[in-house]
Amino acid sequence: MPKGRQAAEQGAPSIANSADVEASETGGNGGRTRQLNEDRILKAAEAVFAEAGFSGTTMQAIAVAAELPKANLHYYFGTKEGLYTALLNRVLDGWVDAFDHFQTDRDPAKAFTAYVRDKMAFTRHRPMASKVFANEIIHGAQWVALYLQTRLRDRVREKTAVINGWIEEGKMAPIDPTHLFFSLWAMTQTYADFDVQVAAVLNKPTLDDQDMDHATEHLVTLVLRACGLDRALRGQRR
Amino acid sequence: MPKGRQAAEQGAPSIANSADVEASETGGNGGRTRQLNEDRILKAAEAVFAEAGFSGTTMQAIAVAAELPKANLHYYFGTKEGLYTALLNRVLDGWVDAFDHFQTDRDPAKAFTAYVRDKMAFTRHRPMASKVFANEIIHGAQWVALYLQTRLRDRVREKTAVINGWIEEGKMAPIDPTHLFFSLWAMTQTYADFDVQVAAVLNKPTLDDQDMDHATEHLVTLVLRACGLDRALRGQRR
DNA sequence: CGAAAACTTGACCAAATGGTCAAAAAAATT
DNA sequence: AATTTTTTTGACCATTTGGTCAAGTTTTCG
Image (cartoon, rainbow over all chains, first blue to last red; front, side, top):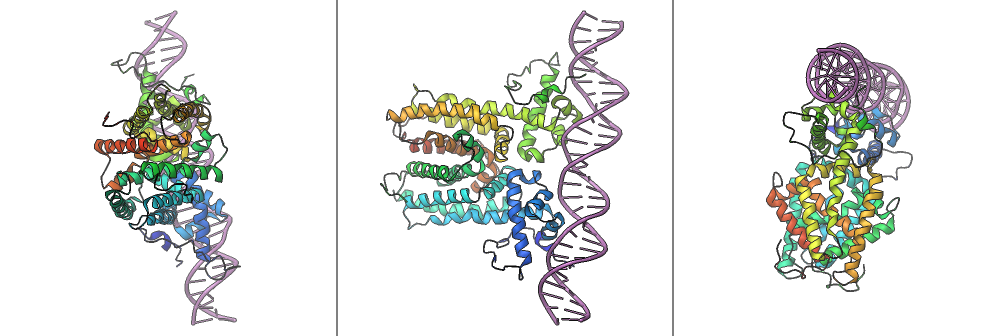
């Protein structure tokens, strides 16, 4: 009895397949065949799902992208849904991390600047992940609804408290912190999700590093100003 | 030879089936059977495409939503793509209209306020349209690429000139007008496209009028402040 | 009225797609 | 080396789905 099916059967996501710290050192192979192949498949899946959405994606397309036979994907992830949820877990983990910038002891201006820069860095380096996430939410968040209502909500609550603290201390202008987060997410992710639109309006074939740097500076300026933090730091670049 | 096919064959969109000014006056029927049915189908299609995306949508689902036999859809729109592009045209038209607020003679603060409110009104009243559009862009804007590179770009260029004028006259803080538009679009549309996420974080089953009003006020404040227009109008509500 | 045009619709395909399976090849384990 | 476990894969389904069609029904119009 092969244990291929197991990866797909875990109903609700826990921490997901670690990934990232992949042991790419194991030259020829070694031991983690499974780890290696799952990573390979997930990487391919991220690109395909981002481009085509869940329904538009075929297992065959992922198989081709991963350079593996289709039956192989089913061996590792069971079903298309299994593969998709595994991918979502991977994406979600990277999504919340940037939150750690908001700590009471920190300078608000620096915190917001760092947050925007982090989000934009994520957007730039993993645009596909962003699109997969966006797609999932737009279509009703069938698989991540629970996540949104628990982990994300708690995290937001926690951080809005910090921001409210700053506001009460007069360190920044009054603003609804929760909606501020919605705005921050929207403004940063638009450069990944709607990259085609941005590029079209900018009359560029695609967004390069320079464009993204420009966008990042724009957002930092906009956000600091909106929070009444613009005159806090002067000539202080990076 | 029925002329059913014709509606779908027009390659690039022109102005699209007027709609809006539908003659719902024609009680029992009268003459515009086609007009009536196309509207009905498009309305159903908007909801289904928004929920499921292009690939996730089946003609059957639209047929059910429109309470018409599937073959009927094909009669009026030829193919699924034909129906989809017809729908896109309808959506796009409503999208650009809000631009008309930016005129040199107008007060910047009022213009931005009105723009944000308009966008939010559109978001609230036609969330499905917004989602259809978002979906199209995320998946590469296969059908609206031309539109983005021509009509939208021209419109943006035109309006950024107005904003730059305001900036040079010292009427508002310096900011990149083009990216400002990206930010405005992102912040407003997020309440339609990512409504599920917003609702989840706010711990609400769904977004009601009150939520949207709150969001609108938040955005107006944020935008005015970001543009250095917050002290321009004091106590001036609506 | 009568013919032509427009509209309706159930039945029917061919292709695409998610998923299965059994047999075989590799690896790991004893 | 023998055996057990894991991995690989081509061939093969059952279902779904976009699209077609031909036989009707209704509407338009001379």
